[in-house]
Image (cartoon, rainbow, N blue to C red; front, side):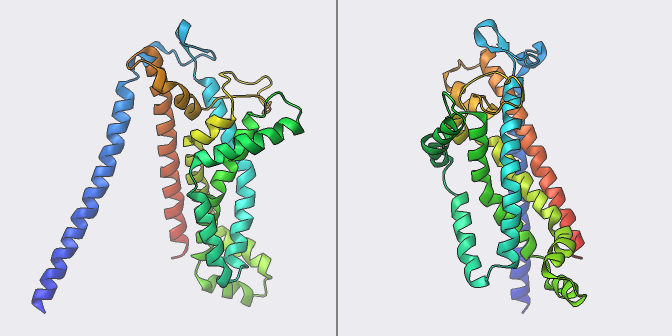
Length: 294
């Protein structure tokens, strides 16, 4: 018995060491990425070249606001389209769909989440861009709206799957108590279950938002390549540019260490910090939601 106990204690210590080491390595990698990006943007940062609206490397003008605007706009469109659909779909799969079919539906959704982004991009080029071009009578359908539409389709499976888990993990006693008080099923969902699942749903949305901001290939294929804020700014039927599409197009053709290269790395640094903040917020909402069940 003592031998088994000693072996168990040894494995516990090894497990703790392994988990701690993995966490430390992950943190170290994040610090190295941040440090590398920061060291390669010194000149751009010191000269303040990013505080302009014009991107013209030949004149040493590297205004990143059009790319930031494009990233925010495309993400806004994607979330506006995806979040309501994802929320009601997750409620249906968690609360109304038979368990016999729920596993099959969730498997399909997770399969959609694993499809490479280039496939979505090609679908956008072959179908959605042509559809937008014909409907709005445009010269080209590769617009900010098309990029937002493709991105909404891409993040739907992530939000649906995580939101479905948020509702499914709520203890059954809350449902029984609500129904026992005489609430209808819809009242139970929106009065009892939604307040408990809300933080996890927000966390799922933030994770999907991180993916939306970091998406490159699909957006690059359908958004066009105009380094300019539209006039008016809500004109989504024009070409644009996001941080990731700009990096994807120019980073491989830019001399290493040049001012142009540093400006691109600076945009990557901004994107890294934004995604890091979103992940931290997502973890905060998830932990806060766990306390509600206690």
